[in-house]
Amino acid sequence: MLPYKLRRSLSPEAEGRFVVTRGEDPCLVLYPADVWQRIEAQLRQHNLYQQQVRLFLREFLAWAEDVELDGQHRIMIPREHLEWAGIQNRVIILGMLDRIELWSPERFAQHQLSPEQFGQVAEWVMGTS
Picture 1 (tube, rainbow, N blue to C red):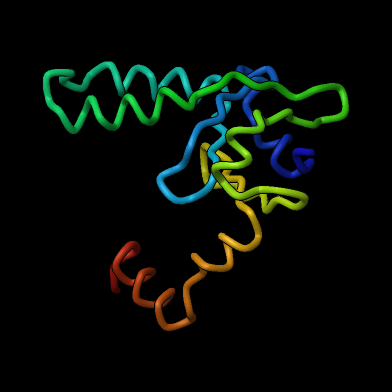
Picture 2 (picture 1 turned 60 degrees about the vertical axis):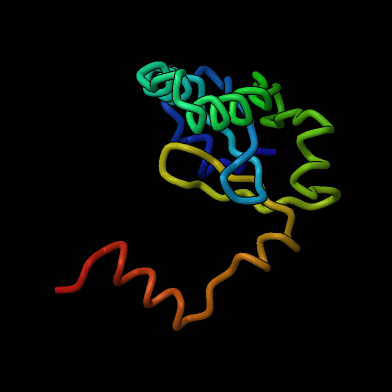
């Protein structure tokens, strides 16, 4: 079930539709339909004659599936996606700006940063003053 906080942040253009695919980390990523359209436009700009581009697109798009919210705000994720992400009975749902990540609790715990690591990463990402 998609939490209310995330549902209310979705643009009306998404109309409760998403594309789910593998994430860059061992999680699933839900892209609202309107965001996915922008991503597809970006992907079309890449040169298919470059091997790395083909490898990435093949992996990224092969797992892309259309899903949508039902009347009870649930999303049916294909079983093979859940198995790949290690999601069984519980799931961690994270809003990540224009996308949503779905994690197994065990894998999410493995990817957590220590406070020191978080500080270093924050400094790198946000810059120093």
